[in-house]
Image 1: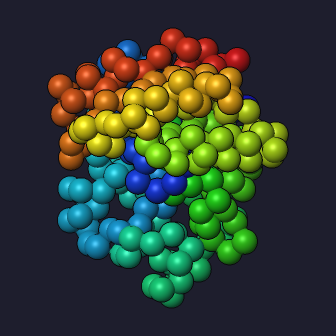
Image 2: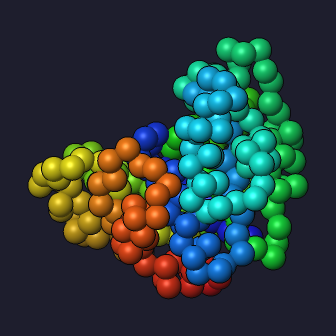
Length: 236
């Protein structure tokens, strides 16, 4: 396996960027050499949005990364759609080879590289090419981000099952609370999941309203992640 982490999700909007930003911040504070790549990001309406509000900009700020955003996120598209559809609607064709080459040239074996996927495991990135295909070709340890709440046990178990079927061992999961007032489904999510799967639980993050790369918020979130186990899992 490569020296890095591929962050995938059980769906879109489950908090992959919150996790990526928190990891970037914590690695920087721990003086761990790391990089971050978001290969494709949609919903980037213009250059100002890219630099102020994009997922890549938030993680860049959280980790104080020196690389320009044009390297951190090689491909951006205007509409907030799956990358394949967003690219097609702009008349752009991205091949598997172009996508892989754009990522591989940014990976440095000497540091931990965080790669943030788009959507869930089976989200289409380009023609006949899913997030799952990218994970397999990069051969990165895979961290699954999920939300807590009704339906999340199902989505998480399905994601873990598919990873293992493809002979990809998940690093573990980090669960995000997306509601300020968690109900029974949210508060029991971890215990329910543990009944059916022994995947390492690497974190359960509290609700972060309008996530921004601010030290107080990032410190709070980082305190809920088991970094010792995470780093051990990466290098095992």
